[in-house]
Image (cartoon, rainbow over all chains, first blue to last red; front, side, top):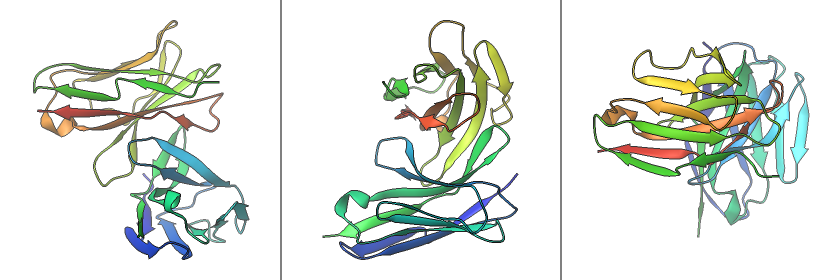
Length: 109
Length: 112
């Protein structure tokens, strides 16, 4: 099956900094999904991308669907404490969703 | 409109016992999916069900695990004779007609 590789695995940043994380896949996806998981909760969909080259924003979040269909990035501008959590890239494969291992975002006091 | 509900939120079992995890999909959703998340990992698909039917169980271990989604009531993920390696967070998601999946808060299973 398809595999998704996320980097970095962890990030430690100061409040107010911008954040960038990315995701690559072993094969082509037709849809890219970015989820956030808060501690003790299930993942929540942040952004869905449906077209190669598409750039989509949701508040301070911006995500792009790579032209090759094998990568995507997520940017968070002006980070705030509630941005802490795990960010997963994901893509649908048949009936299921394939998840990456996540990027863990920590905000230093 | 309540979201996906899962209970219990935390479950502790001794090796050899049975674990039953319940999932109530969002109102109007007839598609249910179960995923497992090990520590430091992403979610891994286990099974996809519609009412009274298993559609895809390609991610389910062949032994000890079963799932159902009866005509009435919640979906149940059942793990018989649990082992330590079954300790994980188990998430249920639901959707309309194979559309966006909405996830529940998960059940954290600990096997002693």
